[in-house]
Length: 311
Ligand SMILES: [Zn+2]
Image (cartoon, rainbow, N blue to C red; front, side, top):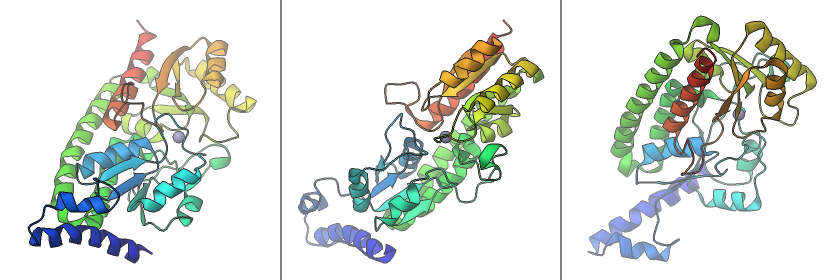
């Protein structure tokens, strides 16, 4: 039950206070628990959330991601080790909007509170295929939405660790200013594209929020990464759109195979514009180790590829 967890969290914070009263350093005393680092543990479902959460948490919480960099996150199958890690966590953050199809079952097997960080964002529905009418889960592809994620994290972390509520508030405000900056860059860059080049064709329908923000028309081969993707009809439909609109370049995301999009490239003569990052950050030495890098990298890749066709 959450109350039990809360009680445990309170206990952890109460401990150093007792020791301070006894004129003993809190550091030495914590060794009796799970090692030197006894900060509360926040577990997120994927790397993008972990990075955003780390910006809000600062040094006060230990933030980790269940799925690793590069993982496919929609149909992920948690391992027994994931469940063991989760049961040790103090708080779990998930995106919600049906992103993590594995999540409901996952949290049922652990006794840890969880918070849905997309709560309150303006949701866009998927328009095509079997998913029509369901929410598009990729709300983080709008930095404006991520400002809402940050507010939800500030609240959740302040409940978890009230002693550092002011720090979470300040970190959140500073990070929201960075999000606004990257959003302004994105909109300015993409809206400078000529009208006839504002078509974003990708493998997964993950760019609805970004396309809305930047005034792009979005097309994709399949709506959400799942088992049934890239049917012949879906590929044909993408080919027809690229031909009809004379789209100069098409893209695919880092967590799936770009083979179906290469078929579109071969059939239409459009350029392959590059790999875009959505569902996962890269490793630290890759092109998008943070969420802010991810948005900047994607918008630069899109602009370069779409305008490159004209040069
Ligand atoms: Zn996705």
